[in-house]
Image (cartoon, rainbow, N blue to C red; front, side, top):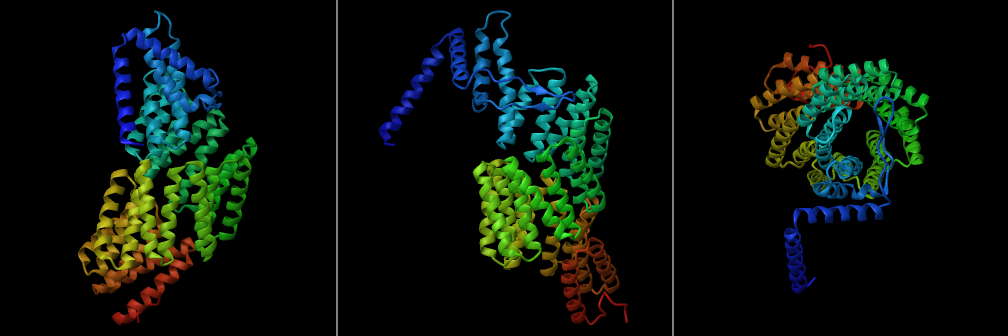
Amino acid sequence: MTSAETAYLFRHALLRDAAYQLQLPGDRARLHAIAFKVIEALAGGRAPETVRDDFGVATIQRHASDSYALELAEHANRAQAGAAPGDDSMSDARRLYLQRAAEHLERHYQYGASERRWLEYSTLVTGFDHADALRRAGADANRGANAKLAQTLCEQAIECFRHIGHRSGEGLTLGELGNVFSNLGLIKAAERCYEQSILIHREQRDTRSEAVALLHFGILQRRTSRLEAAARSIEKSILLWRERGESEKLAVALGNLASVEANAGRRGEAESGLQEAISILRRCGNRTCEASFIGNLGILYADTGRMLQAEQMYEQAIRIHRETGDRRSSGVVMGNLAEFYSRTGRLEQAEQTFFQAMAINDEVGNRHSSGIALGNLASCYQKMGRTEKAERAYDEAIALQQEVGNRRSMGISLGNRAHLFHRTARHEKADQDYRTALAIHREVGNRRLEGEHLCLYSLLDLDRKRVDSAREKWRMGAAIFRDLGDTRALNSRTAEMQKACAQAGVARFDQPPG
């Protein structure tokens, strides 16, 4: 475009705005009413109202106007100023299209924008609709990594549901609040919410919502290394989905059960479960969840030494997320691919891929995943011997993880930074970070990293001539690896310990002291 064309367009925009401002308020309102009617007609007419089941769960029938819903809501809002007394048609239209705009933005992973639309909608409605809009805003705030706001909104929604005596809505929101507390690392609070949610849904005979809450409870139990309990919760969810005949939801539960199997060392069962989930989701056309589980299959392949297949799975997952426009999930899998490159020694490639992942995370407002990627980038720098960069990245990661309430990742980064301090002979700082990291691991139930950092902490004690303390820590860490069935981690830490003990001239920690 030439400078003359740019100048013309600029002058045209100024004149158009000036002409609009010269209109009387009533004329402006009529212009907006005309624009509303034209756009709505071109988009296939009036969109349908939301249909809810007996428990308040909405079923959304998509409509050609959904892409224009936000614009229609704005025109309806401005047109209402010119409506005749008692004519609320434009106010009703604004409510309808504002709700549909929030739904549309949510489907397209624009969680910050959808959260704002739900909050705007909540000011226009009362009763159940008001409470449910707060719940939906809270859920989207949580997805958008604003867990503190999400907690406030969910708690407000629960109060509203209790005030109007809507038990099912209360149960749904308790489940959402459980998700928030889980992201914040507040495990006991999350458990209480899930348990209350499940009880309410059973009381109401709402098997669909019960299945959702059971699945989320199982995911929390898996993340906190309670694998048998996790399997039981998710298997109950699977049974309910089978009874309801909901294949798509069944596949999501099967994929999450596969993660439990993988964590328990049953990798054959995990692989079969993931492949079954992916197959069902492919038939259902749910490409977003399909891509997520393909990414999980990549992690499983990497854990079982099938590196070429793992890389192919990561790349396939990223490609699907790009095709579906799911930038948020694309950034998450990109971060996993970067960690895979780091793990396989392609450190320069890992660094660049971490940068790409963080750029996407920043673009979509996913600060939760940016904090994780920063921590993994710091570990990559540590492997590269770039100590100053590693330390700065750890500092930034820990600050961000603390800010967004990601206690689990914060514990990992603190423990890894402690290892860096140990390697650079800053023993007091290392000791302090290990203590804090272990406290967090125990708080959030991250037993694998508790075992990892106990074994590394023991080597710090060994360097400081605290042999008995070192032996005790190493044995505690090794016992955790045995409980988890993680023989690969145990063998790696055993070899490292044996070398350190030989250099220190002390008996190996896996043998009685001589």
